[in-house]
Image (cartoon, rainbow, N blue to C red; front, top):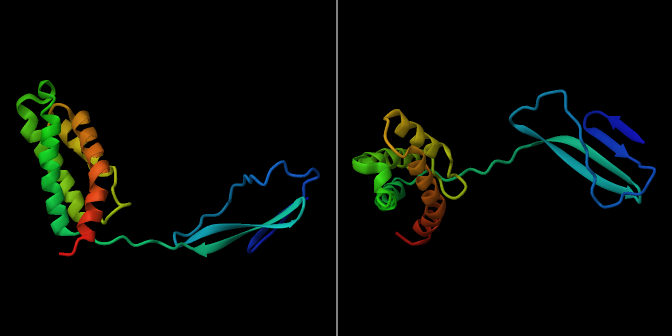
Length: 172
């Protein structure tokens, strides 16, 4: 048996055979758009051995607000990034040649802008600044764009969130 009602949408399943497991998979497309301030909440209620009732309702989205960027942290982390990216990329002299300083400068500038404007702690490290690095390096026809962007991303994934936690855990 399959029962549909509206507002909120209720769906009841009563299979003729018992479920093989506790999992229930529901595939359904919804015809109307949801507003940005609401989400769908799917609730299952086990009525008896072979029947489930699930209700589909709108509930407000609870958004976590990340802290604002900290300019002092952004400056410190940008300097650390510049030094360590230079060291990493200088291992591949054949790739960058005389353009190493400029490649590092472009990457450091984009990363610094991201840290000053958008980075608000763990969970806010985005991929966009690193794709921006690759695009900017290619636009300037500098060598090793993909290598530099990848090295930058790997460095950021390894250090930025940890450094943020250390920065915010020590009294200033």
